[in-house]
Amino acid sequence: MKAMMFVLLMSVLLAGCFSSSVRYYALQDGQASALLSNTHPTAHRVGVSVVTLPKLLNRPQLVVRLSDSELKFEEQHQWGGRLQEEISQLLATELQALHPQDGVYLYPADNRTMPNQQWSADILQLDGMLGGVVTLQANCRLLDKSSRLPVFERSVQHKIQTKGYEISDYINAQRDLLKTLAAACSW
Image (cartoon, rainbow, N blue to C red; front, side, top):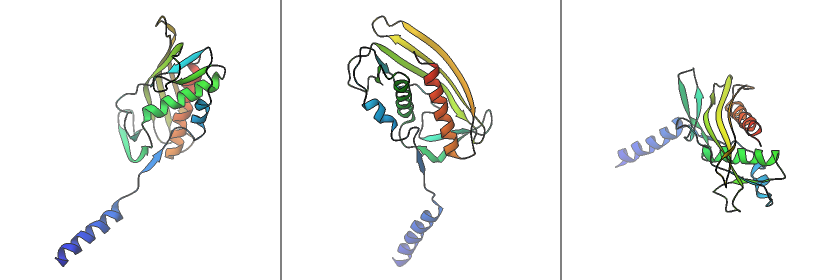
């Protein structure tokens, strides 16, 4: 019995020594969502749909390129929430900041009045190398809700050099690219 307890105790201690803690990240700072919550109803309302992501990115781990064809899923560096929702929230916040006179909000997740127009984006790529270039490729569109016809459709491709070799530098580059997407797809 004592030998079994000793083995169990050693297993727990060794597991603690070899485990490393997971770090969690967010795309936005804590002030970003406050902007949307202060939005007042206006005559021009734009609902921001949940963005679509490739399966490659739609996971808890951060995805980093090691080369053009090799990827690394950072098990110790993960998103604090669902990346798809984080990106949608960031884009809605940016669009609201660009158009303070309009009511911009997440749709259909938000139970506000039906929007006049619906904004959406399909993220095709949002990755790169630590200490290297991060690339965004996306398509965005603004649809008139009554006619279902596009007001505009755009394809966007931007690249940015990270400012350092840390994960936080990589995330900052992704955030900057998403802000560029909002500006490029603004009405």
